[in-house]
Length: 362
Image (tube, rainbow, N blue to C red; front, side, top):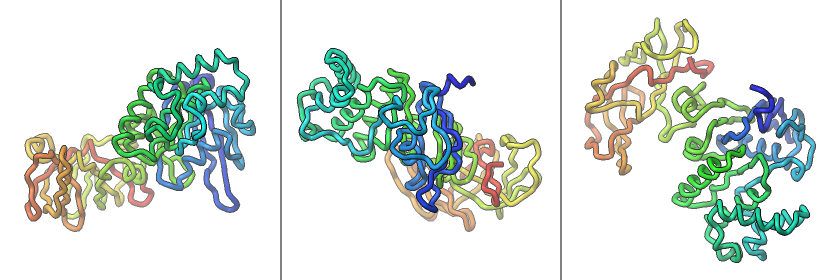
């Protein structure tokens, strides 16, 4: 891919606070018009990376390129980016119109150009009727729309979002998530979005970079991240509830763990031949079949039901398989009780298999 096809390029980026390394020789290429999500738990380095791209933190080493320019040491205002913060950071004494236009006035733009950009942002975000209100008269969702609008009026190629929905309630988060997705579909600008919420990541992203301890553990589409996690950390982090893990061993293409025997026919190994070794079998709760779906499963076994969690649209069943605990996602109308023996089935091609020592996908 030609370098012109990338909006942002991160090369060998290091950042340390004293002896503490926060980013480790990080490389990342972000395509023009792409929606990239940086996903990870607190302290993984995702917001630090975003702040380096924005120019709010100086890296210890490495380079940051935006639209073919080396911006590593440029001021934030010179980078051609718009940023939306976790806190709304609105000026309380100004109206919505004033908040949207403040940066443009400081940049010395003509009045008619300012009015055009404010009107365009207000139309896109549907905040036109709010332009003469002050932030105190707005709901949380409306304030966040204004914060997004303040970045939008800059009319730049790259927008940065630092956990913009984390201060909102669950329903409002879901509503604004749809708005942001719609915004990207309409503008097709490059967007880099930081979150610890995997639902946001899976629904918004073209690609997801999952981070841990300043490193990118996997970079891929939501489908790749979900169906082919490259290591145990990614497999465990993505999914709610998380993936089940069964400790055992791979022997001549068959996974064995106590009485559980799983021939791995159909499983896409990463290499033509994989040597026998201790291994961990990963099974997503929604990929463990029950009832009529058992007919599609070449591997079937019983679990002893320990706990049942009805959740409306589905039911989460906790079962025992010898010393192992398995979570099984069933239909919300399923009738199952603790103490029952439940027959379940799996299709090996939908499983994930990891080397127990390296935790890397086999």
